[in-house]
Image (cartoon, rainbow, N blue to C red):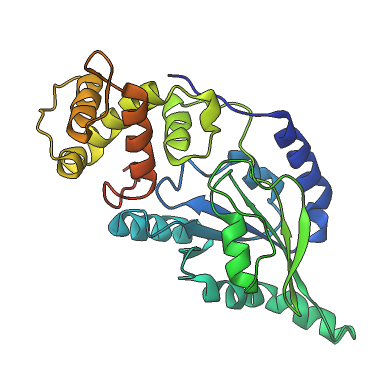
Length: 283
């Protein structure tokens, strides 16, 4: 199942980001804590190569706590200021402004010596679709400044948002990259909702999710749906067992695969199968 999704508005977004990067001092990159590497747009490193950087591991409430700490240390070792955040309840949000001020301290002091009394921090916030940028911004500001939604592609245009008197954010639409070289990356992005669900076959995607979870968290599905199967059971058979257990039966006494798949994917995204991290640090 080779997934690729790069609609036209993402090309416009990348161009807009390139045109506006000179206006900011800091780039804040939101990653999905469930897939910190797969949700990291490789093009951002080039775009932000001369900027201060902050990595936000968002949705940490949905991810495996132990793995999130490992990823936090991984990015810190690479020189990134890294913060774990749950943008829904606000956990970690208050840590962002002090880190911004720390990164700006040298520039502020330099400009003050030249007579500039007020030096606001300007940051661009970037991330893949549906990673929670708008929810985070609204929590950071304390009111609904950015449109939110649970589908990929809600934010479509840039907007400047004043967080505090001396801190401004340039919000940008979620952006992927033109081609996923690794098929597994595209699948993980689809599992978590970063790819438009309308282009996907949910039953096929659910079978791939079953394969993935059986490898990383072998008890997650059996515990959630109270079914029994072994590691050699084909994914489509596991999907059928889930459908039977939930009573998703169509006319003709057949399991409704689409309804079952949609429920499985939705419950995975909502952490009903447990706190799960799909990316692992190699080595």
